[in-house]
Amino acid sequence: MQQAMQQIERRDSRILPTFKASYETADEATLIAGLVDNDARAWRELQRRYDRLLVRCIAKVTRSFPSVSADDVRDIHGQLYVSLFANERAKLRAFDPTRGSSLSTYLGMLAVHCAYDWLRALRREPHREALAVAEELTSEQPDPYETVAAQERAELASRVLSGFSDRDRAFATLYFGEGLEPDEIARSMKISVKTVYSKRHKIQFRLESMVASLNVERAA
Image 1 (cartoon, rainbow, N blue to C red):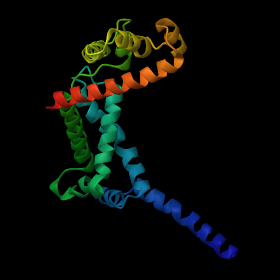
Image 2 (cartoon, helix red, strand yellow):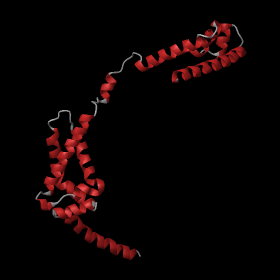
Image 3 (cartoon, rainbow, N blue to C red):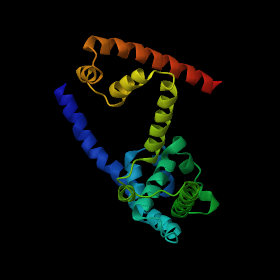
Image 4 (tube, one colour):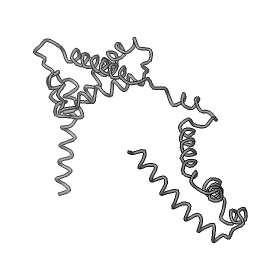
């Protein structure tokens, strides 16, 4: 068995270079057939022959747009290869040398179209700044959303507590507002710690019930 495997390896080592060399000298039809069959060697040969041409075609379209960077050109270049591979290599299958165009002309046309498609898609997107710009816009002032949310919470709390007694409102402020510990509240209000827990439970139940009623009113 081991001897048979060695014979196969020696045979493959003689055949493989022939296959590799075949694409280097292959005509366009043979290269396209290899690409359609998704032969990795054919894709490498396509890249070797036409990559510079494709990049030049993309750059020719994008050079008139100062906002397009070298990274964008590489993105377009990558999207072009994705489009060649997509849909069972449909764009490569569509190449017809009998129409008088060479493969280089056909691929260059696809590169130009891909660049224009990318620019059109970019034009439809809103303008986006880099992350560094966002860091420059940081402020020590409160976040506007948090400010509005805090105001709404304060208004809701004021509305809910309006029906409470002065003593219950003072308790709610100490417990839920200032977050004091039960023993601190007990000393401040001159009540027992047990009473603090009992009052907290009753007030919390009333608060939850009243908030639920307000939410129902808003929904209606």
